[in-house]
Length: 532
Image (cartoon, helix red, strand yellow):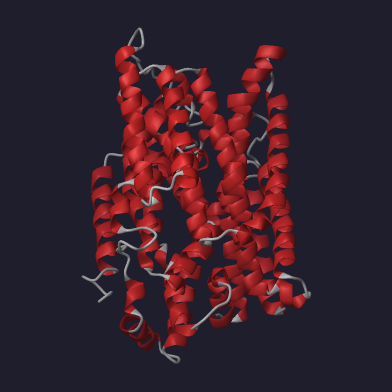
């Protein structure tokens, strides 16, 4: 093991952790609101950096670069099209959440439908994090760290055993951050990691192009642009995992759900000190998404030219980092990957605790034990978080044996939980008299139908198209139920806001520029641009 890489890694991780702890030392963690939402005190810098870092997990470093190396840039569509989804959320959903003083996104469902619907969706969220988010984050980061430090080779371990040991280590560090530190420590460390991630993206691109060009960056860029041009195409072809048409069907639905309803993402914005701060923060995160291909896709493109064959394509990103960067910078990038994984892991664990305590434990305790104080809620939340961490550590190494590629696995499994919730939330937002029974029937119908089409009676359609079809059918089913069994009285949304609701007055200019840049990125990486 290269000692310089290891020491550089430890130094950056230690600095980020110490600064986060120091900056948040005066923040109270004795109440559930303080621990889970940082007392709703976040400005737009904190929101934007935290949203971006929470999304930029090791899963994406590993998964997207692997996909670019093996296929093409069509995986970029997930990140670029999310800019549109984020702006829709900033304009239409954030005002709703802040207006009702939401702590969790299912809070709206209780107001719109009933408590049982809220609890059903909360359970779906919890299952999603326990089965998909936490294990995949641990696994992705373990793959990256092993690829940079070669733990298996250094200690004579099998690849599986090395991944298992790293997963245990990551789970322990993540538990210390999230369970002991709370939300504000997580957000502050995200800002530090965000600055480091942008610097890391520049370092990888610079040294990667130098390696391609025999010491000259411009020569490396020329080589990348004129060879293997099929990998430069971000416009999905019909036989790709994500054809262009999926951007307007299931991919759009998943992105709208992810940025507007996924608890561990939306919780960053729910902690904003005002609606304007939340909208600015989401716009800042959009800027990050537009620069993300430097880390998530360009390394995969460079690797296409450097490696004609890899036995384990999931290790393409860490292999490239170890080969092209000086030891100090390789350790720095390892710390960035580690920090990105911790950010997503901690956000997920914090949201798990929030959902469990607010939506499940507190109603149960108040019903059977009377009034429950903050101390007991914090204890219950932290205990549940630790239980989930242990379960994730045990399960995550076995993702190694999943067929179809790591990133494809992530997207397909997450679809099982995401779009059913999005469907019910959307109908609740756009209608006034659809009853609670329609929401329950819709959730069950969608989940059962998706399982049947994917595992029992395959349709032959891309799973994203199947999601869009089921979305339409479920909406129609809920509307039919609402037609024949409407609510007695139309739903009226009451305002119980605890932060200012004045929107950002310059948002339309910012939103327009971001959308133009999003379209420009698709044109650049297409046959109309550099992918001839």
